[in-house]
Length: 127
Image (cartoon, rainbow, N blue to C red; front, side, top):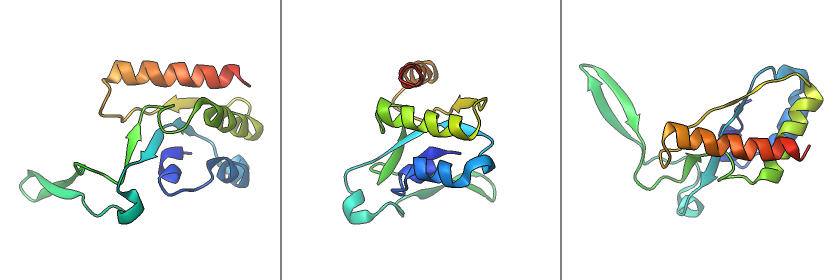
């Protein structure tokens, strides 16, 4: 369960976890947010460009002003959301581990991880 992919599409993550039930066997804590311009460009942002990485090889470059982006856990969705996320996972599998997946370019690896851990700890404490 990678909730970030569902977030930018406007899906109900908690409902998806409950619907999938025991089919969810791995979970990532990964947050996303919509950005200004998503209201007119939509979430299927076509402003990604291709960048050569070697002869015959390419990768996508993140747009300067994307319709959505990955953010540190707690910056796209608040602690009460993450409490509900953890609760829904625990109802499916009480022993399920949740791995932090950090892709917020505004924070270093350690800063983003620390922020995510702080917000997830607050969410877990609210259970």
